[in-house]
Each structure stands twice: as C-alpha cells, then as structure tokens.
Length: 80
Image (tube, rainbow, N blue to C red; front, side, top):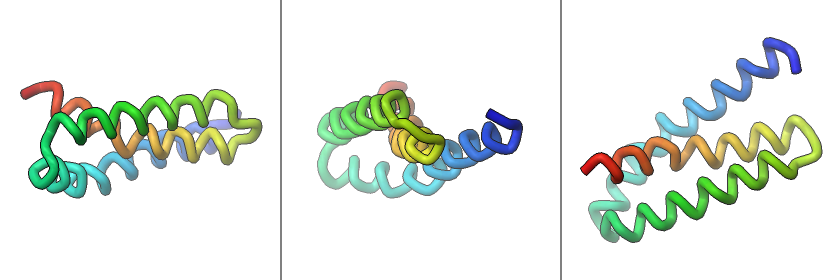
C-alpha cells in the first residue's frame, strides 16, 4: 500500500462521517436513538467485515466508507 492509497482510506472514512452525521442525527430524532444505535452498530460491523474479507483495494475503501458513515454516530449516541 502506498501513501496515496492510505490517503484514500482516511479521506473516504472522514468524508463519509462528515456527510452522514446530520442525516443520522435527524433520523435518530425521528425514529429514536436506540433504534439508530442498533442500525449504526450493525452497519459498522458489516463495513468492517467487508473491509476484512474484500479481495481488492476497492473493497477495502468501500468497507471503510460504510464503517465511517456510522462511526461518528455511534460515538454521538454513546456519549449521552
């Protein structure tokens, strides 16, 4: 893995987290924080598994993208 590849991994995770945080927060207000916490944990696990078993760099980026979407939401809900 090159430095450019590593920068793509970090960028995908952080960008997904930044875009999804307001959407997930609004959904948590509408549907309940507990339900959204369960959904976030399920998608985080699915993203981690996808990144782990994916055979190429593209699968790794996609897995970390899904992980990044809900990484921030899990932290937000668990701190309250």
